[in-house]
Every structure is written in structure tokens, then in C-alpha cells.
Amino acid sequence: MKALKLKMMAFLMVATMTTFGLAQDTELPNVKILATGGTIAGSASSATSGSYSAGQVGIQTMINAVPGIKEIADVSGEQVSNVGSQDMTVEIWLKLANRINELLASNEIDGIVITHGTDTQEETAYFLSLVVKSDKPVVTTGSMRSSTSISAEGPLNLYNAVAIAADPQAKEKGVMVSLNDQIHAARDVSKMNTTNVNSFQSPIKGMLGGVFYGRLGFFREPLTKFGNTSEFSVEGINELPRVDIVYAYADMSPDLIDMHVKAGAKGIVIAGVGNGNMTEATLNAAKKAYEDHGVIIVRSTRAATGWTLRDNEFKDDDYHTVVSGDLNPAKARILLMLALTKEKSLAELQDIFDEY
Ligand code: ASP
Image 1 (cartoon, protein in one colour):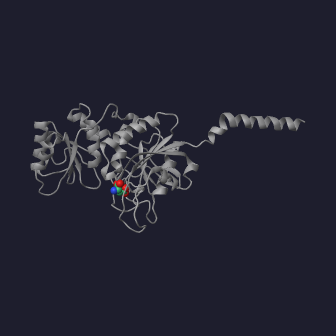
Image 2 (cartoon, helix red, strand yellow):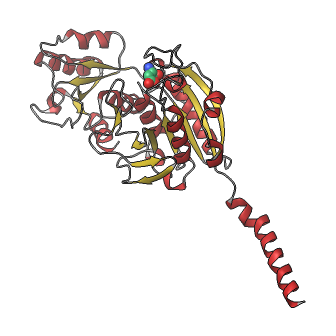
Image 3 (cartoon, protein in one colour):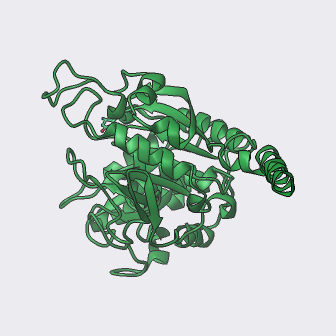
């Protein structure tokens, strides 16, 4: 009799835990996948052909192609665009950022994955890292091989990205980029190779963490401002000021600067030689662009890695130039576009480049 009573009590306790606690523990995290296109959604007429069309496959087909994905998260998909990322636009960035902020403000969503072409993935990820206002994980992913290719790596990349977005360890890391079993900080990562599956690397600061069939770990924290500590947001913004990039080379002509000013650029990033250098004539044209038109010139570098530092071979103040630190030209352009949505002095702009 006593044993029966104990058994009943144990049963009631388990039933209560299941209703009020334990059942929640077995609930899967909710991850939303926002698809934008790219090679991960690309298809070719042959599994061994390097020629394919990006942005062909819809998000539901992509989810269905990933074995086990529904066991690690409650996933649902939304098609935001379906373009090769060479055709990514500010308009799609703003749409994505607003949708992510809306989704993450809800208790229903624990994390976001964005599928994206690899060509400009680092730009989208960095832009989002500056304007997404949430500590929940946001992960971009893609693939170097199309969905119909032999050894397509897209499904495993998507599986891993969902695992990261579903994991509380990945909170407060800013926007992450994950391909090829690696997790990178949006700010630090670059596409380093045109075709290799190991294309994404963070050459200066190294990767943030690793992921192996959904098991993940982090090695370091992101080091600059992002998310809630970023002063930038997309609220009330429908477009961004025009910022162009000018690539420097031996015997570069200064009229390139004049052409961009004439076309309406409010800022110009120089992909300079070495430590952000350009011909003396171009430097003088840059000085004039600021003095006559208020165009902000940021010196970055065409070198694959390294810092662009102030006052290296001349005084930046003499030419009104700002330096990008270790931000590459494409990311320096994004930071400048956002910075130009506010009134800033040259010194304040330099502070922004030092902090973000
Ligand atoms: N051109 C493609 C894109 O960026 C390349 C890729 O996704 O790997 O959309």
C-alpha cells in the first residue's frame, strides 16, 4: 500500500514537471531562415559543371534538402529575395534589417539564419551587425558549390548555421558568418578565394569559433561595437548616402576622384596601395573634394590584410582624410554610408572608424 502511494506521488510529480517545466525543455528553439539567393540556391544542368545560375531554388526546397534539420530546431523559411549576391542592394539590406529586428523582438523567435551568395556576404553581414538591435544569434551562410553540384556543401552549411542560431552560446556575438565548419565575426571575415570551399577567412583576427555537424564552440569574443552598442539603426531610413570605392594603382589619375564627386558621391573610400596610399596628384584631388564639396575621403587598402594607419607617410589632417584601420574597402564603404546618415566632424568620423 505504502509502495503504491509512493508510486502515485512519483507519477504526479512527473506529470506536474511535464506540464510546467520539463515539456519546455524538450521544445526546440525557433529559428527563422531568411533566404536571399546565391549559389547555395543555385542550380546547374550538370553535377560536374562549374557553370550555374545563382538564386534558383526556393527556401522550402533548401530546407527539405537538409537531413535532420528539423531535429535541432523548429525551422521556418521566408524568401526575402532570390538574387546572386553581386546584385545585392541597399534596398534589400534595409528590408532584411527591418524584418530581422521585427522577428527578434518577438518571443517566438530564438535566432535567425540568412542564406546569401558568397560574393557580397561579408558586406551584408557587416551592415546587419551594425543595425540589428538584438542579442539573439544572427548567422549568415552560403555555399561555394551550387545545390546541384557534386559534393554540394550548402546543406551542411545550412544545418550548422541553424545549429548556431539555435544555441544560447551564440548570443551576444553580433552577426556571424558560417561556412565550411567555421564561425566568423561579420566585421572580420572576407571572401579570400574565388572558388574554394575554404574561401571565408578572418585574416587579421582569426575566426570566432567552430562548428562540426551542429556541435559548436567559441574561441573569442567580437572586439568592436555592434548590435545594441552600435549607434546606427535603420529606423526611418529609406536610402543611404552614396559612397564609392576607388581602386588605386601605379600612375593613378586624379580625375577619378573628380568623376565620383561629379556623379554625386558623398564619400569615397580609396582602396589604396600599401598603407592606404595613392599618387600625390590623387591625394591633392581628395583634399580638394573635401574642401570644395564636403566629400569625405577614407583611406583603406587594396592589400589583402593589414591596417591603414593615420599619419604614416603624410599627415592626414593636412588632406582631411580619415583612415579605415583594418576595415577592408567594401566594409569601410558600409560604415561610411551609415556614418553619413548623421552629422559628424572629421574627428568624430575617425573615432567611428576606430571603434566599429
Ligand atoms: N555569385 C554568387 C553569389 O554571390 C556566388 C556564390 O554565392 O558563391 O550569389
